[in-house]
Length: 459
Image 1: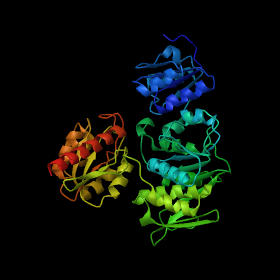
Image 2: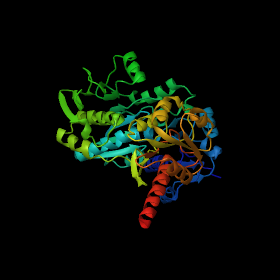
Image 3: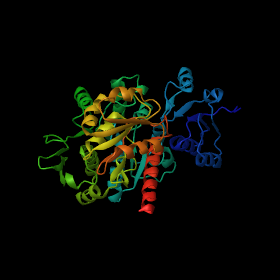
Image 4: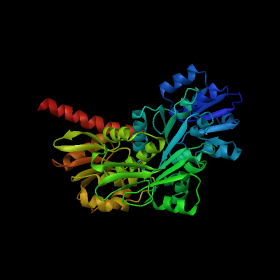
């Protein structure tokens, strides 16, 4: 059907794919967009306005395999038939981030890790914006980086959240300031159930750093600490942060509950109980963002203010409301065991936990002890409950399963008592019942808030 020999092909027509297509088009490069699913109407309109040919609901192999370069959406697995065909043909495959890097003028602050990267990305963006810097937001949040480098009038800094999938297809892209929050098992289904393979994908964030660059990392992470030790000397500035007093760290926690920064001749202290976001994981997020900000030259006055007034992103420990004396918290972004572990550590009341979805090789033993000691009930929101029942049957008094958010919340209302918390923190991907973690979290919020409104009318 498409007979022209397109130079570039973009697989996936979401924000990153359309951004990549627009960038190719702006540089006079022929491009074809192919999405095996349905393309959102707003992106169809944009592609048509720029005369970029596209297809949806299929991949035309005869066209795609004539490309000289393919930009792949991070969500497309290597085992997909179209990817296997592309690899067999030897066609170069890159990420949208890699493509954008060819035209990027500002400096890149890249944030990766299994948990905390979105919050840290948004918090750092907030700090730099408060400091009056021109700063872009890209990667898994904000607009496509490729879209933002189409013009020469670019921000001074780009704060870019980078997943392991994006890093897999990055080769020449340079991250000037790299933040690595932690590495815990996640997405193992995409890495042959091999933790080391997944962890090494995260370390690709460092692959093009020079002595002018900086690496900010959690010094208590076993894999990262071992990696740094094994690869000494490393060219970049090493700026580790730790949650206990430690000589040589760029940031640590004092015995009197202060976050302390001390590196490059700089010194800064901040009371932990005044951070906008509380909990041990948010202390780590604040440390990483603060090191990056001070390294760039943000003033202590601005940093102090921005650490206090930041508002967290939706779907990450988001307070939804109180219904029948029970708090409801949306942590739909917790798509792995480690994220749910951190969420459970913030619980100060008995709770009903909504758990489950598309399992990515989870080991529920990592959160069993916390759940057994703190959960009043469990609700498995998934089409595949067998693994969850095997992990928790007989260990928690109240267990139910649900195939919709309405059903899950109805079970939660029966289990929870006044003063409790209902926590949506699934530890799984959303794709068995929802289109994304955002869709899942939006459903949770909308149903709870609708129930609150209805109750208010009857009071």
